[in-house]
Length: 209
Image (tube, rainbow, N blue to C red; front, side, top):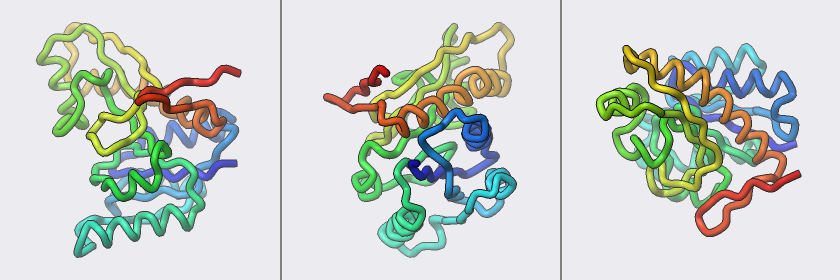
């Protein structure tokens, strides 16, 4: 059984999707045993506590340097025996040192079909605002491994979502979460825990049963 640590910053809807999937047997090879939040006010902490999952708050401003923050983050991950790190709306930068230590063991969910509307500055509603401004007819979500390039790691799973006439950034955000993010993030976690993901030449191969 692989231990999963989930890093959050806000409401924790993707965390809830992971918890629900776990409770329903959707991640048979793993279990969430640690949730780390960048804010003590994040509702995601309450979701984790309700599910009986250990929580920790790690605020970047509380540390004098990135190195000190990195050391404490790694210490928390190691204390939980972490085999997979999931960024579920985590708004604090993960340094190259941490990424290197957990190479191809950190996954992130992004609310667009990468490489569209991704990279620096594209997060939350900004992604959906940009999609609507461009007039795309299809958007979606992507789960990818994390590397040193913002939203630039190997893609694991993607799911498309239709853009509707009259959409606002808020309505589009909700549809992308419900129809894509909450489905593919638990699925990617399950595939990882089952040992079915392999990174070759910068792309992800999903092993067949």
